[in-house]
Image 1 (spheres, one colour):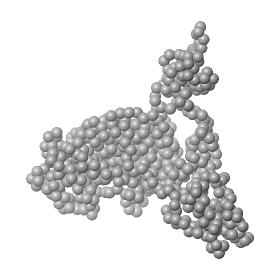
Image 2: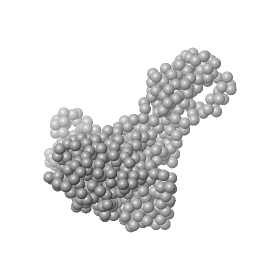
Image 3: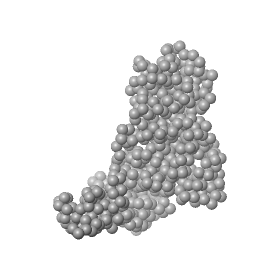
Image 4: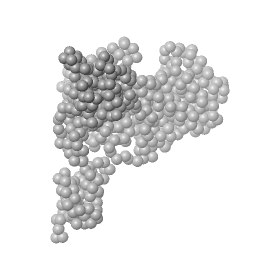
Length: 610
């Protein structure tokens, strides 16, 4: 007796690029390191490394082939020394240069929807609903499995991980690129398993026990039953939301505070870009892009490619207005002989409020900027904060967050795929130690950090944001009250404007309430603050896109807000000193003077809005 069990699947297919080549071994790297300064003969290397002579010869031959080692001939025979290129490569601390051969293949895999297991398409029999119905018409006993519940994750990141495992046919191969034009996902097909006399035929060897049990259960149904309904029992979508801290170096010069300084740094990043600039700005405006266009054009002339994304979607009007600006920008670009074909603006909103920029360098590294500044819709008159990140592990985390923002279209999103593959390469680099601790934060990590700051601050806590809204009291103000309740802790919350539905009278009430609880709610005044930051004591600073006093994190879309937490000697003090030069009424000094009001004894703008 033969029964056909039809299991619903997703089928993913695309054309991929594969890098094929033998990576360097630890023996290759050790040999190269041992001859960086003093030349050695093959015999000396074999004795020193306690390795067979043949292995030493094979390794040296390959190192010489890639110009990493040169031969020295003397009266005593041939010896070997690292070349200048080899010395630079081994001294960098990074993996040795890899020169693979690029292969192009078609790739396809299926994900069965009962337990989330995936298989190469070649290992399974696939039929459409029409073909399954055709089997029934000719008398086949077909049982269809129906699956309820969330189902396997089909995120771009998850499918890239599956694809990487499927396409590599050996230890010397790895996924290098995806042709997004060929990427497709089908969800209307079935994996068909033939069960002959109770024995499943055609089920891949990689199938787990749970899937096999489900197939057996479907096959065991009475002949009158057309199928079985089960709950999805595979892994659920999950993400590492806890910030990952990296020990690295950080220079206070990479903290940019001000208005015009943001434009200077933005143009500097573009001017130093090697081949790639990727930007996410919540809002975009054609006239502001035009003001920056000479810098953009010059970079395009050098061969730099730009990808621009935007996230405005507060309401339909805001989204439509920014989409119209995107069209205007692309019309302007299309008329420029240098920028056309090198500067692209995505036509759809990402829904994210993040401000992030990624730039590659001629040294093969990447820089990331995490900011409060909408670079492509800004006259650069507001006070903003930007952090330039140079540690490659931290930059890789920024890339991961950026990928989550734009990767909703799956493998068809070229830039998201580019970020995932680049992130993979950056994470392989050797970490560089330093005195700072840095983490990229998103979503609820903002709220957790605010609670941590309010609970641990011993001298001061300062929160800066653009808007004061309805979430201020349960958010920033409540945490400010917690910190201010401890003796000796000065707390200030700085904002620029009131956000609807709040009105100025509500702001006055909140200021009086804050003063009664021992801290200050301060309006920025003539110079608007658009920056969003959190600083406590001397060594902790968070720069973010999150409006601490008017917004809350989105559980379903944590990457709607992206920030960076820096724990480094004096970073908070340095930031606040710069901010006090712009906002003197912030008024902090080492003795706490001017920062902590005594009960209701507060006068002027600190207690009542103008």
